[in-house]
Length: 492
Ligand code: HEC
Ligand code: HEC
Image 1: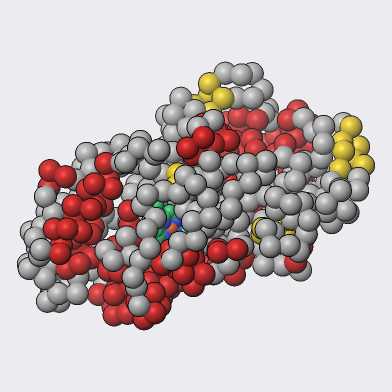
Image 2: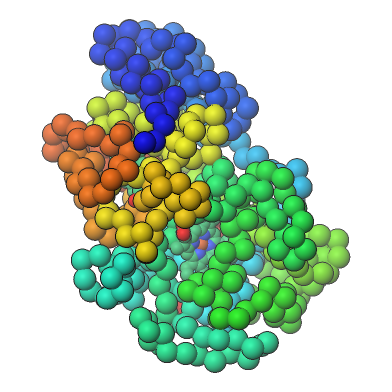
């Protein structure tokens, strides 16, 4: 049985208090200090009862205060006062990998570098794009279907993933394509849907099962290169050697270094943004770029990871309509979207896991023992295919649990299928809402927080409107800075 977590108690108390028209008991708030080092936010200041305006500063978790604010925001307020939910937190940098412009630019070049794959066909950015909410814009295509647990395409358990490299084997620089038993000579597809890489710097652990940890161990020498806060760096190691993503079988990291050293940066890309173009003009080879970023021309895995993570730390989608509304711009959300947000916070119980401002509980170590990984029971778990969090912890009660995704830009991910499966009950926002309304409970281990809801169709539509429109950063959608990018050689 999963431990009952502190924030559950807090929010339940808050719901109860709201029903009585009182402020939640401050003693029941989460005791965590949040990621930004601030305290939990206080009761928001626009309550119908003339709330106490206790705070909302400091980037704390503030779930309790958040609930109070949502419930109150339909009230008389109207004076232009900000709703007062915690605002988007400041990005933290690991001490071992401090922020520099050179690393950010090198990381951006590497992220869009198709030559980083064994056969020049796949960049990180092939599967992760702003316009797709940080996921793969091709996931809706037939070619993005994974056969799922039964291994047979076009059956009910199919999933939608990211399309990676064709099956191949590598000996030094020599590549031989092979016939894959499932995908043949077509690009292989990942078994899970690409998670968004936007706002990912706040996650304590990355991937749906959290296997990329904050402690980053340099695979070239086995030494701890980042003690904590380096999940982004740890994550980079996955795709470089993953057979279905960027690597042929038998690829080594030293082959990656050698290849980069001899590659002309972004030779396959076009429409390269000016800032990246200027960087390439100043440092026309990778050894020169690594010299600019790290002081010597050596290319190694740690440096690749440090640079890519540095770029990813610039990708803050913090200008959504919700952020503007929360900052006091009352018309940034429509009345229906504000209503949808209230329902999201209170009746829908969504903020038990999708807490503003990041709309996830991931990355807040103090808030819960295991509170960021949940088994919703929306998809049947096949232990031979995908055990979710259990694959990392070995804990049977976490079978099928996955990380709570941030809902920022979820509207942009909808077309490719939602949830870690991209299919089944996760096809679109309405399907997800109907699953929350009447959970199918296909499996055991289902999180006790997932209970049937009694929302009307109108209320469901308001919540969807809020999620689809209110949480999209227009810069991510239009791929404007910091989400700007070159066009890939593989793109039409
Ligand atoms: C073939 C498609 C593909 C490619 C190429 C790819 N990824 Fe991913 N990415 C995925 C999938 C699928 C997941 C989720 C996997 C899982 O959770 O098991 C993921 C997860 C992530 C995450 C974790 C997000 C989170 O919130 O947990 C980050 C960050 C990320 N990728 C960055 C990168 C970087 C950097 C590269 C290049 C070095 C890259 N990806 C290459 C498909 C891809
Ligand atoms: C018990 C914690 C929990 C609660 C409560 C919860 N969610 Fe989720 N949510 C999750 C987890 C975990 C996932 C990922 C599940 C998966 O991929 O299978 C998720 C996924 C989603 C997704 C898909 C996001 C994406 O990028 O694919 C949406 C949309 C969503 N939730 C909305 C909601 C709404 C709306 C509510 C309230 C009605 C809600 N959630 C309540 C934990 C929760």
